[in-house]
Image 1 (cartoon, one colour):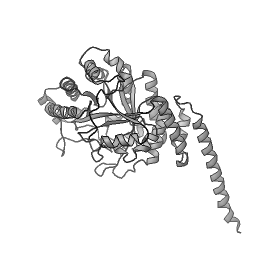
Image 2 (spheres, rainbow, N blue to C red):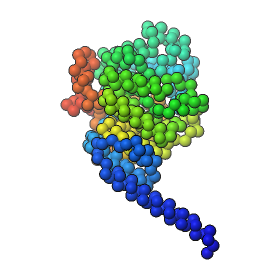
Image 3 (spheres, rainbow, N blue to C red):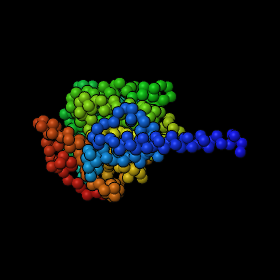
Image 4 (cartoon, rainbow, N blue to C red):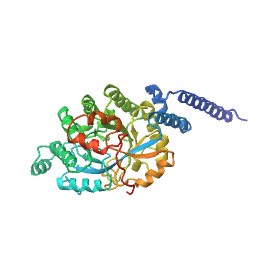
Length: 414
């Protein structure tokens, strides 16, 4: 036998032996975790880089953490999606929602349109009115200033505030706005007409602001600015939804650091009601059309690491962006499906329809869980909100059941 023939075999055996030792080490380390105790950054970095062979042990640890937190129940919010305006001054490389004035599909909803959709959702048992909109489009577009002037408002945020109040006053739905960056004043104003609000942190990697990157020409996606909004919501004790977007050019290390930034704010203020792990999906009309999507393994690893970094947080992943792998996401440690609408499409990802609620229920029950409808604000955050006098408190008390979930589940048809 020639000497050079044996060398690859030795290398292969050494690699296999090393991998086996690492696999045993991962399994032992994960088995020793105490459910409810957050893991360190060092372990999170190793786990997010773990191999597919190590994935079963990682998922088992995430499941144990989830069951220690909220056993046996997976929640969702039945909502209507209200795209108040799709005009936006940010040009993100992955977005199909935003429009410039004059673009096909550019639209700002009228109060009548808002109320029509909200009332239709009310009849279908919805409890959440999710307001999505571009970030301060009037700062870039005089056309938006004209629209606001015609409607009788100074800014997009003034209009949003009025529409939240309209929905709160005229229907049983509870507003949940996602308006982008907010000042101290605007967090206070919007929290008077909505029980919760949200802003995706997406990433802490400033490199994505560079020319040609995902957040090039997106002034509102500076991580420090988004962290400032999330922190100010914490100071005001506003129940807040945030999360990360994976597959937009960040590294696995970036994902861990983004989660740690969220965890640090929650440890300080206790206001992060939900952490979303959202996966980038390529679309033919976006600048990032040819960017590879995160693999299923990447998604599952990120969800599981999120659960282990924040074992006592509500964690969700959008089911419509991960169909048909619902069971796998449950295995990775989520305890919530997020908002699902029986009426309106996902205007951010219109090519990905919501799952039929009966299908979601059956798939959830097949894994041994009960599917329960929640309000846009999670039960553990309700007591402070209902203690404040006013219309918002009255609506919350009328909507919640004894466990703080949605009082009446109106069938399952979507």
